[in-house]
Each structure stands twice: as C-alpha cells, then as structure tokens.
Image 1 (cartoon, rainbow, N blue to C red):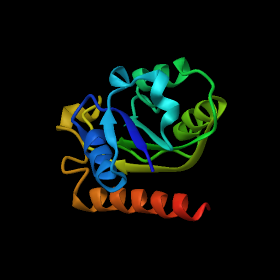
Image 2 (image 1 turned 90 degrees about the horizontal axis):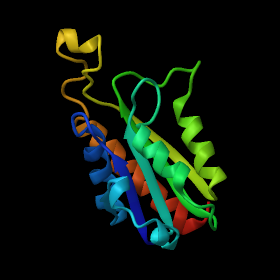
Image 3 (image 1 turned 180 degrees about the horizontal axis):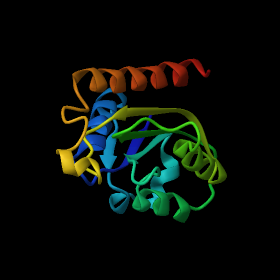
Amino acid sequence: MKTLIVCTSVSHGNTRRIADAMGQVLDARVLDPDQVDVGGLFTYDLVGFGSGIFSMNFHPRLRQFVRSLPRGERRGAFVFSSSGLPEPGFRPYTRGLVRLLEDKGFQVADTFACRGYDTWPPFKLVGGINKTRPDADDLHAARAFAEGLLTRTRTGS
C-alpha cells in the first residue's frame, strides 16, 4: 500500500513525532504541505493529514493545503493531531478537516489525537502543559493506530 503523511508541525515537534511513528508502521514518507507534489497526491492509496491544534483548529497551512487540492478519485485518508487539551465536545475541530477532505474525494478511515507539549498563552506563563508529551505511550498508541489502519485496509473494512 502506497502511503504518504502530510504533516504541519511548527511549535515543539509534537505532531512530527507522532507522524514519524505512524510513518514507520505504514512505510510512509512524512512531508510538510509545501513539499508535496499535488499532482501525484492521488497516486497514493492512503494519505494522512495532521498538525498541532491552534485555537481549536488545525494549523492554517494544513487547512489551506487541503482547500487547494483538486477534487479527485476517492482515496483513503486519516487525520491526526496533537494538542495541549482534549477536543471539546462543543467544538469538535476534527470534524471540519474530515468534511473538507471528504469534499475533495477522500474517504477518511479514522482519526487519532494525543496530548502534546503546549506553550500557548496562558499556559506559557507556567512553562507550558504536558511537558513530556507525546511520550512513549503516545507513540505506542500512534503505531497501534497505524497498524489498525493497515489491518482495515487489507481486509477492506
């Protein structure tokens, strides 16, 4: 299965560490949106899209990249993120990116999120939160998530 992971990781490298763990399992390259050949994107069987969460949304560069994609054949996709706080029920930020990807012709198989070191104000005043995250357990969970994607892709479920 040909897989690519598109990742915007700008603050502390949290999301890139998650992407790299998934990429090892999926035998996938991890690229910043600026490095992706948009014309070749639809040659992949599975594409992951991820970033840290900023003001309860995915990074603007990742969202702009997805918006700029032409509508194409249906391909598998997954969404992942790291954030200082869990996704709030009153404003599920994952849903917006999933819908945008579906509008572009992707079939989003699943989503993954974990905590990450966060120094966004006001957390910066106390040195940040989740200073050790993502940790070994988070990276293990990311690899298990990727293994689950492989299993579902192979069995067609």
